[in-house]
Length: 171
Image (tube, rainbow, N blue to C red; front, side, top):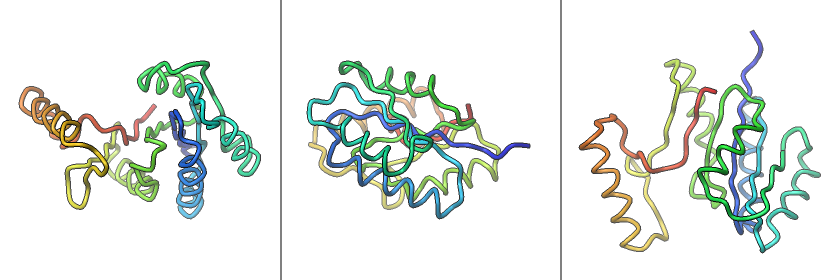
């Protein structure tokens, strides 16, 4: 049976300062854990030079590890994920934010949890243990908590964070 490969999707918009850090962290934790991976950067026409930074990172880490799948304009997060999935060669998909709100050190834990329980989805949560949201104003926190509360009440999904975007999916 072939080894698993993980496609990490990083939608970006004005992330030129964060992108080198998040990529470095992803590479560090994936290499330490000896996990086969690719990082797919989906930039939505960032005016700050994010795509140029991504091209430099591709030269450093290799075109087999860092794939660039830019789009001409800001088309939204959901369609960025779809675009990334269409280009993913891995049999697992990991979605995360490029703004450092999701730490790559948790990716090996996601993978271990998925393997040990044969799960289709592993989802990170901001609302458990030492998790949290930082830099959000009260209104954004209230909307996020409210959406999660209503989802729990209506759907009973047995998950504490349905609106977060740090997940692993079996493709």
